[in-house]
Length: 360
Image (cartoon, rainbow, N blue to C red; front, top):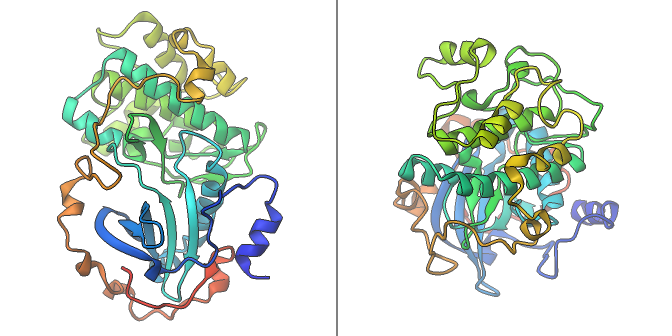
């Protein structure tokens, strides 16, 4: 039994990849259309599956870079979380994952309404009803991850996509930590500077409430245009997060301010969500206009429609990526070319296929 089959057998009760699952997917099955994103370990491509002409986002990671930076554990955690994400409407879904001798592949939903960060940059801030809608969908997604004992740890506008209708889709699970039940803590220093919680900055043990802090930071940014403790000077910003009282300028309702004060409570034991997690957050008065059952079933009309023209529309993707020629992405990063090719055992769980082309 191969690695993929073992994984399916072990998780048959809680993983559903749908009828399109193909454990023998390989790079040559896809037509590459454009580069739509870049990261530390590789690139994200818009690709069309030749057999059915469906569009996917394909995340391609260079094994040598992953191993050089000793990130294989995080990559496997990302894959595990992606498998579980298929059950939730506001988490990006994984369709296939496989590996060649040189690379790892995640074949995921192509979500083309643009990053929340992109829309915030363009509009500076959102109306409170619009911010409430996005925050509610994000809270639902975070609550789902917590119910599976997963802490997300990197909630920020760059990791939030809008789909073609305008619903939130949370992506990039590379910093997720599995196995964190309500009584557990972890202590790895990770995240994005503007969104780090005080307990992470202090390098103290922390729990699921780091995600509620990040949610408060994102909500604040949607309402006011910048993260709450932002400074161009990194050390000053860290000092602000640790010591400066939360500033709430005019323009937000009293219930929005109350929610922000609850989520951005520096003492994580007193933070909103510390006792009853998602239930505590969803019951806050700020969300009283939200019917949570309708929200989960996507029956609430999004306040903004990206107006995409079809499944291959890239109008909301940063031109910095899409203008790059796909052929320029072929090959191994020179810095790591002297490393030996890894064994598939380093990435157990990915199905293994022969390298049949130069896909990225």
